[in-house]
Length: 351
Picture 1 (tube, rainbow, N blue to C red):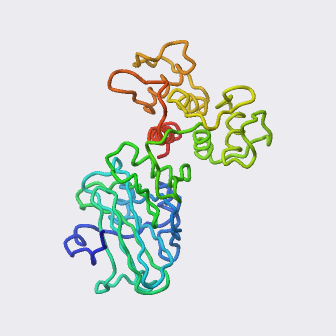
Picture 2: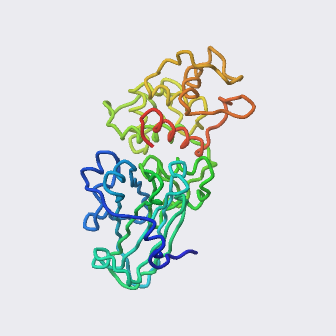
């Protein structure tokens, strides 16, 4: 169990300069879904179990604004005597070793505004933006405030920092930031694309991804568009299914045709070939051009040939060390979120 420490030492305070951008300048460069939450009055309220995506800092603006940078504010309700666990996870590949995330907590709006040096508020820093959690025991009933900043040595470049923050909402089975699915899982969770199991406490990365789950994830990634039709020829899905609109949308967009004219096969496990084919169709079936085939088990004539070559050329898939893609292999949830994350990053320009 971890706890916040008192205010950062004077050495860190002198080495790190933190402040606040104007909202207008910030939004011109940084796309933060919680903006404008750069003042305590506009703090984003954290709901228990929900995972929120945040983004702070930009070196160009940092330099332009005389070494001051963005800060994000959050708040949540507390009851006296109860303990709340705050999770903060980061996208490590976006950070250099000299960048910190600074996290301060305040027991009152007055302290949050005044930030008194002698106040016994909680404070912590995350070097290299690694995952961390903090237990906060409320000594009163009211609203608790959190401020998140990033900073660096004045002689270094400041990184734009992506992070997730949640209250009692991190996955118990996704803890190692070195796992390749770690960043994708929390990024897509913060976007509402994946939601986990057991009230959001487990992600189950080793579970197979079903066809129903896959089209639902694609649909959510696309913004949950409303399908043009409310009816389907598939007899194995019904309107009360969570994936009903997702399937209708996917069929309309030509992403899937089902396993037959009357069956979608929602419980069937999605193979690696099917997964990249769905993504390729979602992208509009782009030409592979002169892209080379580096997989010995992917042949011209395979229905998934263009999809796999395209996905490989776009850095969405990498295959295995033995030179295979294993198209018939089952797509685990950890692989699925990684494919979707890379799709959003390299095709949609996000992530």
